[in-house]
Image (tube, rainbow, N blue to C red; front, top):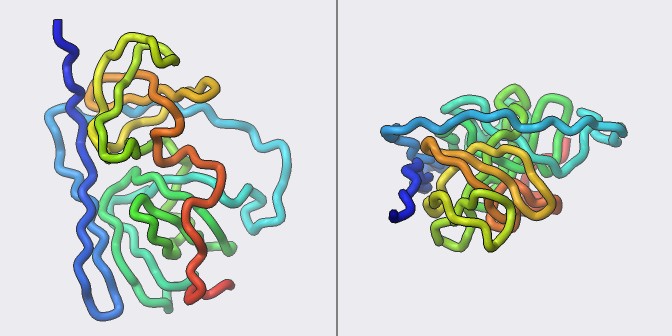
Length: 199
């Protein structure tokens, strides 16, 4: 019996130039199967860090709403440079102030967003060099393939074991290598732009 291809919603990125702004459109059309939301285990923070939030930087989060303004600096007085259009998009926080977070997005761009527009990370993106990603029944390269995750598709993040994480999308779930996922890197994935304000 052929392995069913997982029907997932792929992210499409569109940049349109504008005066002092840039549109960042993540086309998130509804598919016949909605993404399953599964619990992501929360790791207890045992140490405080020298940051406004007392949390480590960099760290991962995701967008809370379907419309999030990205600004050139950490205040509402700074220009909107683009707008994110998909809730749940995983982003990496690479700097922060008390009320603002400098985030890196899947395109490699960085901008400031209000901290209220972010929440704990529960999603990842297939970053497997434009290839569909094999989702396996258990961690390991020899485990049977249960489904596939389309290139640049977003999935819900489950538990992780060593170099593998369980993800789910479109009604299917499976284990994939950590190295193939955007949203699992421990080092900063993009540099802080010099033109952005520091405080």
